[in-house]
Image 1: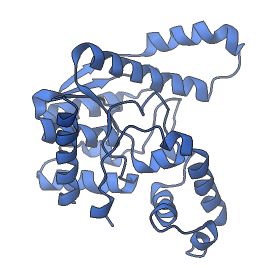
Image 2: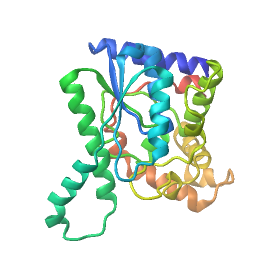
Image 3: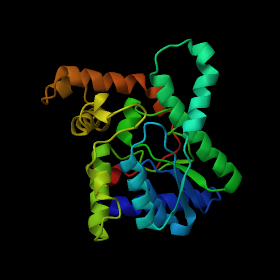
Length: 266
């Protein structure tokens, strides 16, 4: 994974430099994707040029805050805590006449992601620094992301890494630097967007090992649903993944420009 690491670090540096930026801003969730992007950004730009924000909502866990703080300490980067709870409650109140007591669901989940995007972009506009998007290829391909929320930014750093590859690179980084720069708990906790109570990624998606394998067969190798099923995957799971991929092309086309490293992984 060394070549992938080096390519991403150089990609961040050269992309920001080409656009006239020498610093970056990103949201830290306490999860793995943002932890990896922060680590790469620190290597590319220096710790003094990376600013992270932890923006908890009512559904953020104490562990996420602890892991975000531990990561920022390990990297030596600035980390500010800016809760979005008051903004979230106010937005729900303002929309309540329109929503007419409809049960909470996807709209409220996306509000939280979009409020975080507003905060990041506003600070970028006022204080400088390019916002780095932290979504991985698995999530982008199946639309497990929020337009104008966690997808906002000027550069999608890990948009070419499937989630299983995010894990591989993160473990490699800790081994390469001979210390747990990325907190162990971040690597071992079940992934969650924390946009509703007790949410886990696998509530909505197949296990990432399965999801990524199907996506790779379809996207990288061009195999049809029938051909993928013949490799041993359950037809219902293949249908789910390919359907999500096709339905979310409108999201895929609206991602920030990203860094291509697929040639170093295949």
